[in-house]
Amino acid sequence: MAELAKSENISVSSILTTNEKKTYIVLKRSMDIVGAIIGLFITSLLFIVVSIAIKIEDPKGPVFFSQVRVGKDGTKFKMYKFRSMVSDAEERLAELLKYNETTGAMFKMKNDPRITKIGRFIRKTSIDELPQLFNVLKGDMSLVGPRPPLEREVKEYTDYHKQRLMVTPGCTGLWQVSGRSNIGFEDMVSLDLEYIQKRTLLFDIKIILRTILVLFGSKDAF
Image 1 (tube, rainbow, N blue to C red):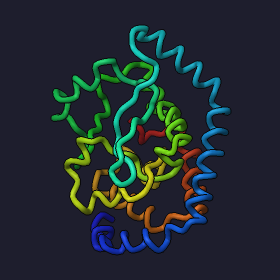
Image 2: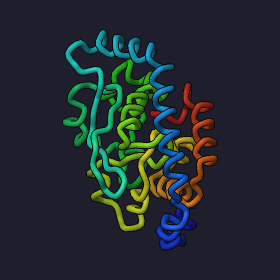
Image 3: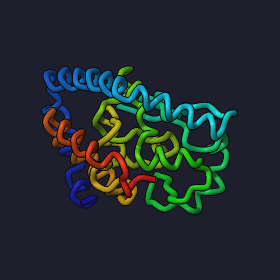
């Protein structure tokens, strides 16, 4: 899969200039705003329950966690999540890098000791991602698109990898509904470029529907 995308390195850029039509951009943004508002309304009670659970387990830590991510064209923004790790998780990352269970410029560890009890549940069910609906309203993110990487990850990117930064990042995407944590970095990039090439409003809707089906109890999330 990765080899196929690499062979299409040049065509990805050309498709961006021919397929990214104004109608699609307007409709996609409209869908993002409406979808985010509906999502926040439906999950409002869940927000309250999760916030209380996080505070009960760790009263001193914040409910929400923000992290600088890299978006379209390298623009940096703060991405929001429910806090699923201990308060000093970032400081403890360096000692865990040797246990990385994925490839390339990403860090994944199935039994990450930094994850709290409630954190393990909300990560397993992807509930920790719900605050990103606020990022969608702000325009930093879309409902569908490549996942926004960390700054340290982008520093390791080649020009080929940077192509995934040509569009607005999303809360969900082709990678998430195709295996998520079981997929290595190069294949994730390949799926992102496949999405960029094929993206249409109908394709976005299909990915959202597939996301809903795998959202709760996904064995691929950690």
